[in-house]
Amino acid sequence: MPPPLLQLAHSKPVVALLALATHFVLHNGEWDNSFHVFLAIWVLAFGSIAITEFSQSTNSTSMVGAFNTTIITAIVYFTVLTTSILLHRGFFHRLRSIPGPFLARFSKLYNVFVGVLPHFQYFKKSEEWHRQYKTDVIRTGPREVTIYCADAIPLVHGPMSRCRKGPWYAGVSHLGGASTQTTRDKEEHKQRRKAWDHAFNAKALREYEPRLNRHALALMSRLKEQAKLPSVRITNWVNYYSFDVMGDVGFSRSFGMVEKGEEDEMIKLLHESMSPLSVFGHVNWALNLATRTAAGAKALLDHINWTAKVLEERAKTTPKENDVFSWLLDPNTTKVSPELNADSRLLVVAGSDTTAATLSWIAYELCKHPEIQIKLRKEIDDLATSKSHLDVEDVANCAFLDGVINEALRLHPPVPSGVQRETPPEGITLPNGTYIPGRIIIWSANPLPSTRFPLLRPASHLPPRALDLRATRSHPRQARIHALQHRYVQLRWPEARNDGAAQRNCQSGAGF
Image (cartoon, rainbow, N blue to C red; front, side, top):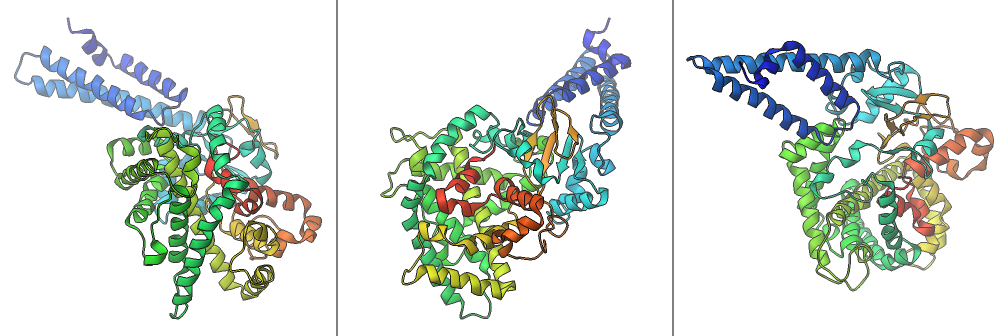
């Protein structure tokens, strides 16, 4: 009589039932970041079948027989499993009534090949679907929707929201802990953010001001030199500047990129590490596997190791001037926790890359609109008088500068595809009446300004809109939504000129 394992393998109905049971387990749990466990179980199970079949055979074709038994069992199992998953996702899922691209309901791999890989601009593809289906809520994955409903932002991302962060945030936490931004536990986030609040309160910001001024003056000096050339690639210089500031204010470490006029090797590594996140971020199980095996994610792993090394070096020193990690590190030990290592990665990315992108777009818009550039220069000159630089109090009074930054963020948000949340078990009802079931992933995308927000001329760079009350009188609802977009989606840094709130929001993941 064959062993029970072989009896099971030879019984196709039992194998089919096991496949259906696997689908039930997958459907009722979150396995995006534990997919390697299933792979290990499958390898062990089918390997055991092959070994058992081979050991029970006595003829010369035992290896062929063992191979055939294993392959047939695997074909039956995975055919039933795949068919069950596809039928459920395509025709019986709770999101089946929400419009969206048909193939996207079966797998997020469709989004990767159609929306990401061609040009790495998924937000444009998402906006295209939004226009095609003419709705504020579209289904963009098996259990995922993308919403273009700005007045739903407080419901999804606000401080009182019942939604939590989605599985994307845990994608690389196994490599060195979760940062304050990526932790999905609300209570843990609340406790860890307290330290960040100290690092970015008004007193701390004033302590950082001399460093910021030094780097700003260095940048101005280099740009004056570059102005003699036929053209200046401003994107490079604001990248050098933002990373120099991040290194100094964050770690008391100088990259010296503005001085050298070239990119540090480790910053190149950071930019390279973003590509795997762009691709694998849509298929969390693939991101998890890639980082566990280093397949396609070497640059990301190298970046993680580098930031850990930078923080370890910082922990062994006491800087003359306080930096961000003066508030986060324990002065009584040089040991660095995995969570702080993760926070170092957060500071590097959030404290430099998004700022550089926004500065680049501001420069672009000012070049396109010289009349705005003239008005902005006048406002700054009137405030500066004989000063070499503006301080925190001065900048708080730059209303037109505030408008310029807000408009650049509106037109060119640093995170155009939005951020991920998961609905609570009971689900949520959006302000437009659409019910989103529980345990559904939500992306709050930023609509392209040419198709949304009819405030005067939406696609134009018009800073007065951010200041002119006539826009609010003409379109009160849209003006309110416009303000919500700035606060919750576009990481409105100008508010930091008053109290540092926006920096804390960006660094610490405001609204959870």
